[in-house]
Length: 437
Ligand code: HAX
Image (cartoon, rainbow, N blue to C red; front, side, top):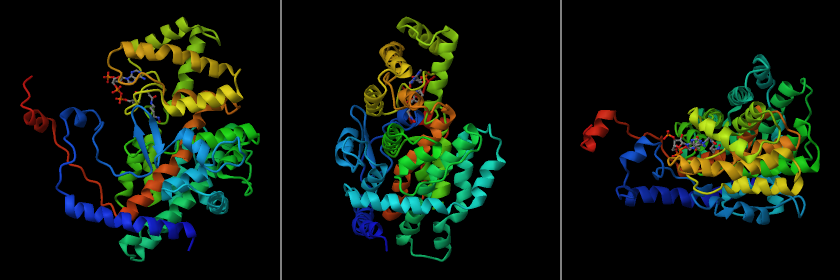
């Protein structure tokens, strides 16, 4: 057996027993009161999910198994001293809760490069059957579903296995799926934007560098950017739409492909992962309408205010949990200032950052006026040559697999049951609070 699986058993079994014991001894304890406002505004702040891979603090931002992004930059294995951490290391950390060694990371890199080569040809047929102008997220998700013919979980389930072992075929499916997503993403990218001139996987490269390579970018800078991008988008606690959707569908014991596909359908929404593409759309439209590549702060202010007057959101700003500038925004801005200080788009992002929070604050209703991860990620990719912004959410999706699928393995280790909250109609809520119009 793969030594990582043995490690998961060692770590996971006592935790699974703890979950059962907690339910038995404290299942009736009240842990939190719930307000009507929470229910009617998307369950914000309601603790209702068990997630171990990462935790989001409103002021500080994301921590993966307790480690902040700057700490991960220090502690996770890298290819070069000055370089970005390898996403393989973050995967290992989220999976086991332990910092990986260089050997662990190399082992995962090799495993993924090997598994990536087993994509059945019908998956590419499915992509090719779609029109080229179908959004890359449609192509991506269709391919994910098409790959579920390979589900090891389904086969194992039908053999009638013990449910405490469900995590093991889930792990196999997750490893296959994560290994193959860069191939799929790059295939879609080359199909849509580069005349179907496909580039083969290079098994000697790490996972993120391979994605960059298969997309047609072999510079050290883009490889580094891709590693950074893959690390910072990997997870954001359990309640965000892509994580929660993956968990919810997974709770019906749907295989990892079905579960992840559900998450990706959520990521494709403009209030979630599609925001990275929409930021570019918003910026380009602003430049076109103002008629300059270098608008002044007062022109940006006018345009942002017009966006609000038209009843639209300013993409890349605001967050359901965060109440400060997203550290994922900051780390990208630092990367950009170091490696592409003169990039006009980055300077523009910086200028927008000076203007927009104040405008959102003045509305009196936006709870977080600060930029989120999507406010800069597209401009950064674009500044390094990846200018085709419909692919950005797909890249986000490749990264998000690391967190949500690791959590799926843990859901099965914990033996979590099917998710089934109670719903009520409007009358019920009104009566509950003695509502008087
Ligand atoms: N521009 C304009 N209005 C905004 C806004 C923004 N950027 N952010 C919030 N608001 C508005 C909301 O639409 C809401 O208006 P109504 O009361 O009229 O319905 C009000 O402010 C209160 O909303 P909130 O409580 O502050 O925010 P929510 O938790 O409801 O929503 C969102 C959080 C991220 C969806 C929201 O801030 C938004 O729409 N931002 C723009 C889209 C975006 O950048 N999404 C990506 C978020 C990060 C992410 O998931 N990446 O994948």
